[in-house]
Image (cartoon, rainbow, N blue to C red; front, top):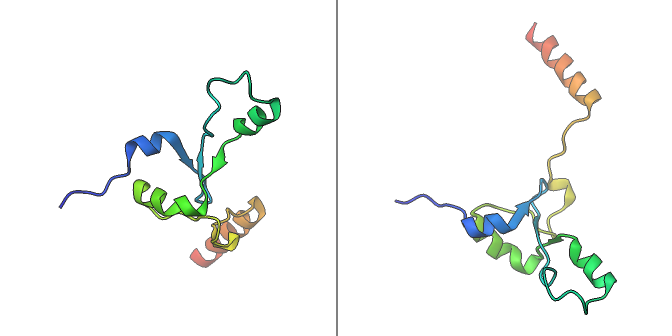
Length: 97
């Protein structure tokens, strides 16, 4: 049976953030810009996040689960602070001895 692979064309056009959201470049920004207002071009400059309606399709193309907007922020993994990391290291060393 063949392996499941992500869609290479889609991978080149998006970036998956650490929290599992999919960022992509806005359309209508590359040419015919003279008649567009400065505000519109400024807003198009920012990368936008794929909405809920497209997340399912993105999951199929990337062949992985994504967070989406409806999943709570508490579901994401948070890196420990340096103090927490030092405490964990000390606790591990104490239990190992």
